[in-house]
Amino acid sequence: MRAIVLVTLALAVMTATAASVRQRVPNKELSRALMQQVMTKRFTPTKPAVDDPAKRLVIENFFTTRVDHFNSQNTAEWTLRYFAVTDNYMPGGPILIFLGGNQPIVTSMVDESTLIYDMAREMNGAVYAFESRFYGQSWVTEDASTENLHLLNTDQILADLAEFVTYLRREVLKNEYAPVMVAGSELGGALATWFRVRYPHLATAAWSSSGHHHAEMDFMEFSEAWGQTLIDYGSQECYNDIFVAFHVMQNLVDIGLSNILFDKFNICTPIDPENRIQVMYFFSVLMTAIEIYTLRNRDLNDFAEVCQDITDDDFPTALDAFANWFNTKFAEDIGCVVTDVDVMVEAFSESNWNDAFTMMGARQSLYQMCNEFGWFFTTDSDFQPFGSRVYLELYSETCRMVFGDWISYESIYYATQRANNRFGGNDPRVTEIHFTNGAADPWRKISVTSDRNAFALADVIPRELSGSDLPAISDSDSEELVEVKRRVKALMSTYLYPGAPRKMAKSEDVVA
Image (cartoon, rainbow, N blue to C red; front, side, top):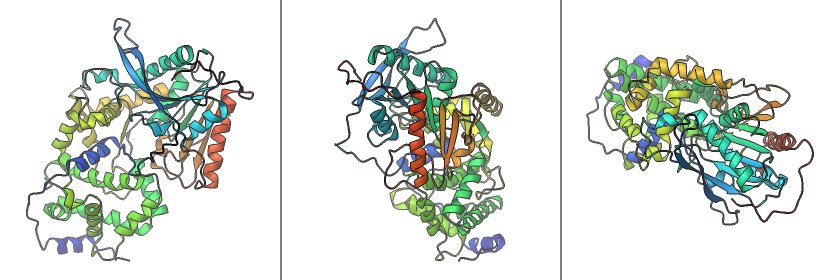
């Protein structure tokens, strides 16, 4: 075990040499990924979906609806993208809709590998993946400029979904009384809950997997919960080393030796200690890098892998070990990591549909965070390992610089309060719904983790992260996970059909 070096001793050793500013070539793709993860906390798993030709066909289609559901003088329309899987459908079967939330929809949300597909097979239902407006290929306007993004909000998305359900019942399945279940994960899980709250006559049941229900401007609890998961599935020594590394880094910045950090880390430009926002962004990049790395594949073994690297005795200090981990994962030979706030703001400000951040939904997601949800990771809590240099000011200033001076600290705060007042936060008044969360998932802090009533139950699954209950039951699932998946299927079947589902011949009239 590497001894914990006192900060003063570490500083004395590290100040022996000063870093010279050298030219480094930016890794634009990697830097873009980190930028959007720092600000929006969205990530794409690194384990690709398997392209199995044996899987049933998932059909892409489009549905026309209103641009603005709440302005009767605006009669403009647009086309929303969705996926359909109807090979199991029989007349009388349910409509099962998976909500994409703040991500483009992908076929793996509803294909044969999913639990929702299993439900459709057992209940003779039709499965659909619903893409939120402004995400993926569901383009409402000619671009995603700030002027157009006023049409992006929860109310408009839920109204789109209401029109979509009506369309499926009347035009596709020819059954105006078909029972409907809405489901989703993360923001999609919250949208499923809120649709059941707002449109109970259109949604018979709902399933929220790791739903982000409670709007919270200062989401300091995330790093607290992440730190506890690190201790449980990595080690206490690993937590301690990260704690020491971040505190040494902030002390170096405070005494004017930030050039040492430029020398140690694979970043493109030196840190300006006089630029408060720049310093906060640098620390947020490092904090987010390790948090997202351990969560990206929803595999708790990644925590142990990271800790093995960080607690390596080959390095003299915790800072050296952490810097080596960062530089290894964000490799120097393919370019440096951009930590310039101005470059980040410029990337989020691009509004063309072909721009990288708009294509992946990062700009749109940030807009919703700035105007509805918050969910900004900070170091305001003392019970996390990342020091104390990431404040709300970083996010409120980024929102202002990207979208305009009309956004302020106060406007973001009041927006989160409005969201909770309208939908109930993590205590929604709703029935015929089931909430699921992973016990090791830091996002559970803004989810529903306890029963709300006899018809709104909750499961917290031991030793699991976000979305572990979405895939179909497999041999690799723990006993607890299998039990929860079976309970989800049983409850949804009960809510959709108080009696047994109808069994009838397959219809020839059903289209996607």
